[in-house]
Image (cartoon, rainbow, N blue to C red; front, side, top):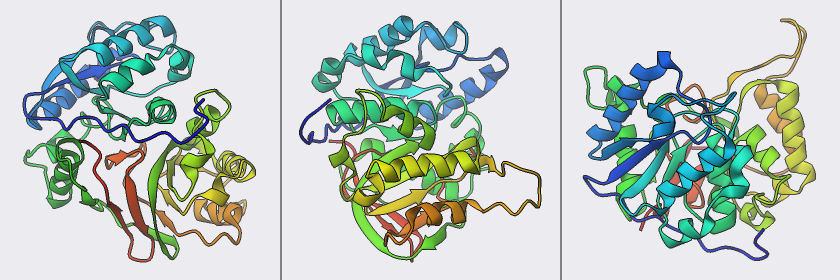
Length: 336
């Protein structure tokens, strides 16, 4: 674990025709999801990139709940890191497997040739570990199958596309291909102000339960990464009591005393532990209860999480979260 702050490691900006690898760092590809994968890879091609689908995805390999044994998954991912032709890595889906091979990551390969890694859910743990150990600006973003593949028509200029999704496509291109501040992120749905205020700081976050679990490992996000940070998180398939507990873990570890603002994504299947009408709190009430009197702006309902689609949120990039105005703006480049 680094003992002093690590400088940001910016990937090179993607260019038209660059090769993007679709990999399986976590869960396998189910046969029924092949059409989604095909649509997702088509979106990446329509954005201007060449796409290589890795063997762990294309061949449908499986080991229990993963796309392979930990050593196999690490070997494929490390090979992509070392391949100079591969300019970005996009996860095809999430799952339960990343924790099993974090200790096999080739961190020297990341430092030698930083490239964007995109994903969310379980893959957010991989992004956070890489960021903690190398400073890599990974991108919390949609994945190829469950992500781009699900809403391809709205995203890629098809007949379903509307103004919001056109703005989202442009946001992805600004984040990945332009070495300049990407600017305001588009609101695809009404965002909410849970506590007024405005703050600036580096983006840090991901799936809440994966962040909390990572903090018990040598790949934990170091304390200084939370200093003045804009902490973003989302959650899926969890009772409110579990969210409350994990937020208290962050409180007890001092994280909530270090951050400058909180951005909450769109929860998916997060709800009551008991029967309807049992008088349990809302997610907003849970968050504000744990924060107590900390004067943190809280912007909520932002478009990222398992309900999708996901805004591109590059780790370490400075952002302004204005809960009062209900805006989130990327102030520094994600790529060089």
